Length: 256
Image 1 (cartoon, rainbow, N blue to C red):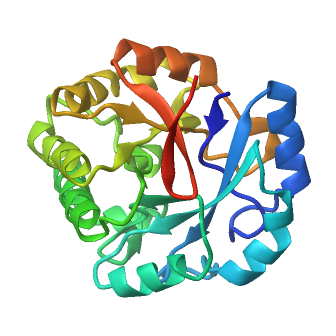
Image 2 (cartoon, rainbow, N blue to C red; image 1 turned 180 degrees about the horizontal axis):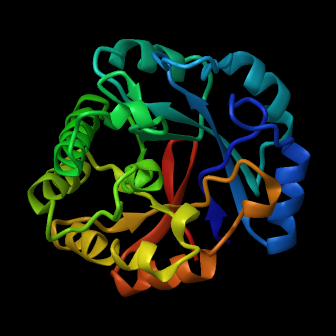
Image 3 (cartoon, one colour; image 1 turned 180 degrees about the vertical axis):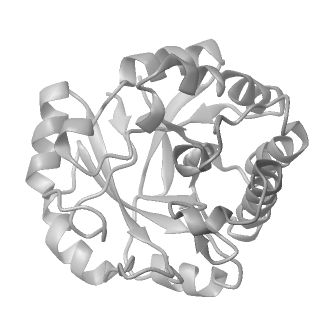
């Protein structure tokens, strides 16, 4: 059974999705699902991207089973490793995704993050920070959405082009392989072929450097997005020679 290994319910500040809604949507598709609620300790905006692991576990653990896993998406930031590890130790999470949502304290979602900076400057900083954080936060199971910045950057062509930022991307991929981290295939931008075609050389390079596995996640915040574009994602993974996986009790499971 394939798993949607990246989703957000009401425990994430930017989602109101209920557990039952998410589970019903996954069941209709015949897939499993992992809830991966947001935790960003130093988020600079008005939203509170934190939650109580114990409250989360108390409410959702009775639902946990063959088709539901409970995880977290940890926003990776300098100086927060000990705090992050203490958070994760509070309950027996199934899966930990690590993601870059902030660059030098600024939210990638917000336009002020890019003020006064060229695309080349921002993308090089993004990849440099990502590589550093993967090595620092080596406890994570999965590196989330390598193309996250392409969603929100205000430049004419936001796509991550491997040929342009090869050195920075390679450093991220080496960090992923060196730390036995899985590179996520996030389907959030799979609505248009151009979005995922630019990812092909990145994931093939990951394979060349020793990567073997990928998790597939919709990054759903609403039920209608769960499992979106998974058929394309599975074909993508196969074409790149990568095996889809998910996690249970922090142990990798190969999906068939």
